[in-house]
Image (tube, rainbow, N blue to C red):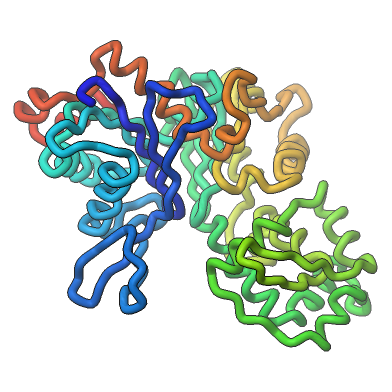
Length: 398
């Protein structure tokens, strides 16, 4: 495996891994496993463990590794047991690095890879840059809707502009919690419906029936699965208010494990709308994803450069596959920028497997860059590490 390159994209919810030399193919990324480990009472970590006495820990939160020992266990499980690395013959690794990763964390990761995993070579790059590479671009504005954060940044000539980086402290996990609240307290939906419609006397017949329904307490995993089945985004805020005020019958969804849940009318729209009204629906103050994108581009001083960003916007991450989110996002952006800005969302290249983009854009970009970086000898090798130590990562990975 000395000439192979394993591509590792580590996120707060999922860890994706695969081989760069096989891509593009529908088999890559071949590994997609939860970013979580089971901790036994004696302190041992096991990413594959499922003992009833163990406790589930997530070592990555908000794009930052919070427990390096747990991350090491998770990475070992993914690389050796799932991907097929062999001890003593590990090969090269390409790391897809979250935005705002600090120098100490980069050096700790470098030390871990060379001293614990014994890699032949290492290269890392910002996830925003890799997402653009997946779309065949080196300039653009990236909005990455993740599990517990939304990262927004502009990229010019393959480099992130630090002053334009924006991080929103909400994501798919907040929608899961919102789903739990709506199922536990159906009356909350009626109250929010009245607020959204601006009419205290408005009645949603679908929500009215919820008073007779027994509240349901969902686990986080169940809430996430149910959310993925029903979430969608309205065309506009006015369309959202109109839809949840109309008379609609509840819907019944069946999860893969056979459980059935009745979801009140408008629940799916509320979940999607939370990305555009985080303050009123999630109770999280700050801009929505479209406002953050416009604010990010506004930090660029050159008008032509701002226009270039608007003409090359991409929406990626797990949240980017929500039905209707792309149309709503671009509509909101166009309402806030000059008409001559020509704001558009870039389509994914036709030659790439459709499931991989935009959901797996970061990993895809990593696979694309890994091939080029290896050929051009950009990888940090053991000689570099032995000469400069963990700080060698800053020499070649900017």
